[in-house]
Image (tube, rainbow, N blue to C red; front, side, top):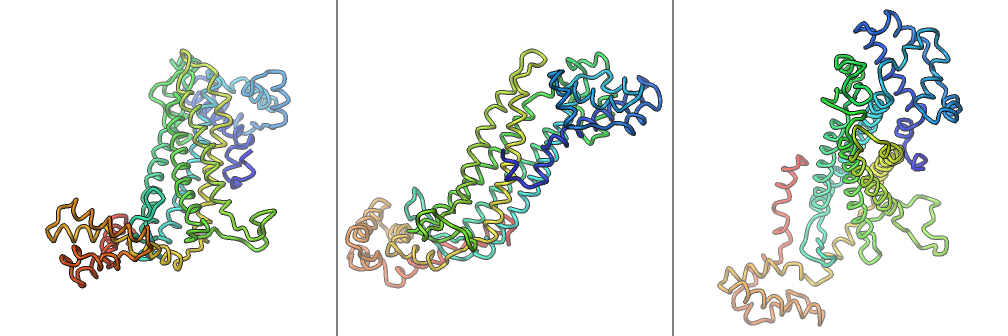
Length: 431
C-alpha cells in the first residue's frame, strides 16, 4: 500500500482509526441536532458524547457477523452506552454518516495537498530566481531550438503549479458538502434543519439536494484534480530525467552518500526519484477513471461506487502527497550544471540564432522564403560539414551583401533572446 511512502499525517487521515472517529463525530452531531429540534430527549446527546467509544478490533469482529461496517460500528459504540444508546443513528441512514465523514477526511487530505503545493511553489520560485538569466538551449521535438534561461523554464513550471493550486482549492470546495437527508434523500425521518445544523457543526455545507448519497460528480472533480496535479508533476519530473541524460547532463538528482545507482554498474547515478514520480502519476490517473464511472448510479443509489472509493481516494491522496513532497525535496537539492548548459548552447555552432538572421534578411528586402532558404543552406553546412553557422553566413555573398559585420553581431547577440525575461517574471509575481 502507498501508506508506507506517504507522510504520517496523510496516512493518519486515511487510517481506520480516523475513519471511525469521523463517523463518531458525525453521529454525535446528528444526536445534537435531533435533541435541539426535540426529536430525542434533552440531555441525550451529552450522555452519548461522554460515553461513546469504539475499538477498531471490536468493530472488525462484529462485522464478521453483520457483514455491514456501519452497523458493526454502531453496535460497538452502543455496547459502551446505557439507555441513551438507542438514539445513536436515530432517523438517519448509513451514508448520511459515511458520506459526510468522507467529506471531512477528503477535506483534511485537500488541506495537506494544498500545503504541499504551496511548498513546491516556493522551491520552484527559488530556482527560477536563482537562474533567472542562466542561459541554456530550449528544445522542441527533442532538438535544439533557441536560447532560453533555466529560470524561464522554472517560471513555466511555477505558472502550471499555480493553476494546480487553484484547481485543488476548487476541488476542496466541491467536496466540502455533507448530507443528512435519510434513506433516499427526501428527509422522511429527519428534517433539512437538522442537516444544516449537523453540517454547520462540522464545518461543512449542506448539499442542496441529495439521494442516499452525495452525488459523485463532486468526488470525480476531486480525483480528476489529483490526476491533473500528478500529470503536472510527471511533466516536471520527465524534463528533469531528460536533462540528466549523460549526453545532456544539465541537472542531476541528488545522490546521497552510500547510495547505489545500479547493482551491476558502480558508475551509475540514475534519476530514480524522478522516475518514481512518473510511475505514480500513472496510478493516480488510472484512479480517476473509476471515480468518473462512479458518477453513474442506479436510481437513488447502488453500491458500485463504494468498494472502488475505499481504494482510489486514499491511494491517490497518499500518492500525490508523496509526489509533491518528493519533488520539492529534489528541487531543493537539485544540482544545476551551468557549464554544461553553456556547452550545449554552443554545441551546434550558433545555429540557434537562425531565426534572428532570417528576420534581419527580411528587413533588408528579401522575401521570407528567400531569407529562409539563405539561412537553411548555411545551416546545412553546420549539420553536414561541421562549419560554424556564423562562418558559413560570412562566406555567403548574398548574406554579406545585405548584412554588415555589426548587423551580424546583433543577430548573434544572446541578450536579444532574454530581453523580456524580466517582464515574464513580473507577470508571475516572481520579480
